[in-house]
Length: 319
Image (cartoon, rainbow, N blue to C red; front, top):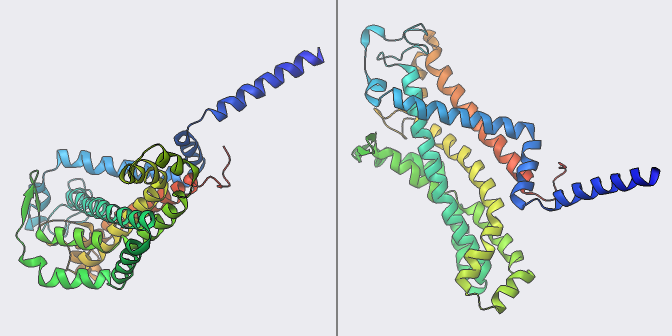
């Protein structure tokens, strides 16, 4: 009887071991991620924020968000205006929805530019080495000397106001939005490029890369098919953390009045409009935009930390 029980237990353990061994890398990463409660909280919070902004934009038009009602100016939160109104009677709730669109568009687009440049520059430097590596890394070091915030302020002051507002998919976008996107995207890829270069330098010495080359894989195919996919963990983590930085940078310059220009709403320029009325007791004008900025940055950073641990095979979080 004892022998039968032992054999049954060994069979069960064997099946569990096989099921674990059958997990794909993506499944292992997901299991590590969901073990991190704070990362899951960040993912849920960010998902709810996206739903709030996307669904809200279907019910609230941009014209409603920019509609002026001087009779309702500086109204505290009530049944009609659940987040109150600003100094010209515009609904804070509606502007939070459309301001969130702009802040996220700026963040996501700028990060896409940054990640693309960082991956290509770092990957090519690590893959080719030699004079290509030297030139690309010297260029990267030169770009590191450019102060992003100062450049945003200067371009926003002297160029942003002169660019006409454009309409994209029915959404009015001020020219200053494009300046913020490109400056953030073009000045924030250098750190990622160094990390990608280091990964590619180690990966290209692996056996599977040598086998791929011996089977006739071209340099381009080896680079895009075997090296870059195995660097995606670093790229994804950098993307999430970069998104938080881009949203915060947009809020900086918009708060200074040199970023996103009215009538286009963003959380940053909503804070700019509120600073005059802080001492007058109109707390709702700055509290709600601030809460959304803090909540967004918190959720994105928590997701980034969780992804960093999940992609690390040496993570202390066991399956």
